[in-house]
Amino acid sequence: MAFKKMNKTADILADKIAAGFSMEGTDWIPEGATEPAVIEEVAEAEIAPDETLKEQLFSMFRHNKLALVSAIIIILYILLTVFAPLIAPCDPFAQDLYNQASNPTDGHLLGTDSLGRDVFTRMLYGGRVSLMIGLLPTTISMILGTVLGLIAGFIGGVVDSIIMRIADVLMAFPSLLLAMLVSYTLGNGMLTIFIALSFVGWAGTARVVRSEVLSLREKEYVEAATSIGVKRSTIMFRHILPNCVPTLVVLFTMNVPGNILTEASLSFLGIGAQPPSTSWGLLVFEMKKFLTQAPVPTLAPGIAILILVVAFNFLGDALRDKLDPSLKD
Image 1 (cartoon, rainbow, N blue to C red):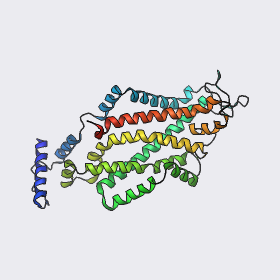
Image 2 (image 1 turned 90 degrees about the horizontal axis):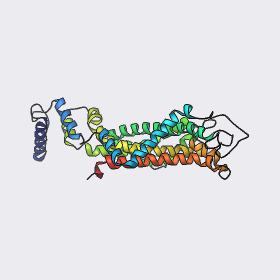
Image 3 (image 1 turned 135 degrees about the vertical axis):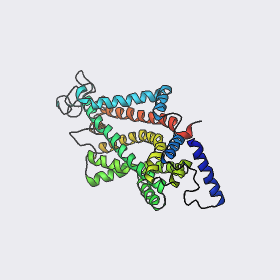
Image 4 (image 1 turned 60 degrees about the horizontal axis):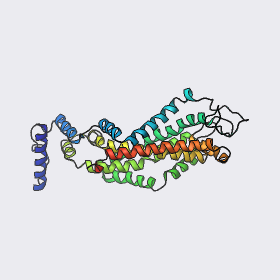
């Protein structure tokens, strides 16, 4: 019954527009069609996918073993770093100056660094920094980009122009260069990188969300909700935003490895993590001159970064193939 009322409303709207009549007032709307509960129920039914997001994810993992392996690798990395104090065989700061830059031994699974510290232990603790910089700034920047993209796409006009021009300026410069600029301005350290990556990476998300909103705001349920005076914030966050979630999930898995690589690059350049704390990028920087003498502890952090980034990319590709409507038959 609700669908019939909604369809009748849409037909009258089309006829009024075609005839060039004014649609001021609400006397032309069928009885019961203006009930908020009815409008919201119809809108949610209109946008409900054949499968929920949870069902789509389970289906993807059942049919795409590469995505499943990638997800397992990512979870394993997270567990290893979270439980580093329980897993690490040594103190991450304990030095052995008689055993500097050595290859793996019985007491050191991946060898030692330039100060005789256990590389495996420092990789576990350094992974905390790398994963935190990969996940948290990505989350913050995506929330910021999503909100600004919703506002720009739905409101339009001058607001849209201002937000998109700022996004254009940010996207005109490489993210690594902007992060370096912020780091040099505010000083070295992880907090600086955190701030830089959080407030530099929102532009791409904002543009993607804006393009989604421009398409979704033309849907019948959005026009009907707007015509009866439903608040803009309700329309944006209750009816439009859920349709953007699959795209945001894909963007998240694509942006995390980029931030991990940016952090590793900044730490390698000496403007990221500062001793005695560590990260994978800093470990590579500290051991680069010992490549021929101790290749295992030198290459291990770089290989860890490579495996994690590739896992996120494979998972992102699988999510895009599963969740992107334009790629479905």
